[in-house]
Image (cartoon, rainbow, N blue to C red; front, side, top):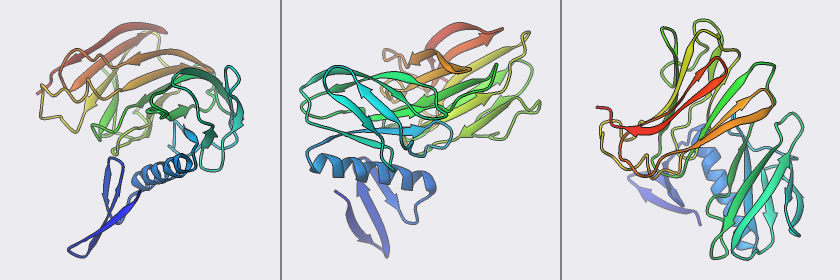
Length: 263
């Protein structure tokens, strides 16, 4: 339910975990629309699944979502949603495909008649030798930042959202209002270079022992050309404000996947 509260001449919109002060920016409007549409579906007795574009955060329309078992197939509407019927508690799997997007498989869980994690992100198809890194997370902390560094070279992040100096990398989207996606696309990697992938908890950047990153549900997916190359869940057992994910070296992934504290 959306509530309006008048405070000192300003209107505050309250919805789920969000408190937005008008006027809303583009990301805040997106989040509010997603929350409102999911609530409408639930009020009618349905279960929502939502699909967003990795580069823009906009809804993916006309995607075919096929739930395994006898649940059926659905097409996303103009808001990027499908509406499922009431389902018993448990785990479900589905595949999704859409024109100009990479086909993928996902899982979701129903708990007490509710889907806690109903948001999914799809990547558009990539050209030969292209990579894409996509970060998503939960409602807290509000701002996680995806970083890509090339040794003795560029550093692409929210500080430098444009293409790197050699024109090979760009930050497609910087999200500061929870959930993501935050996305970096790489046109090509030099074989003799190392590329470091990590996430910084910007919200708690001055709290080196914060547990917010570990409990954020953060998830990073790595695409290569037109398939999922690998994926990483944030470790939950250690406090800190930086998540070192991996190094990409000559097409090989060198795993780190640990949280550290940075002052």
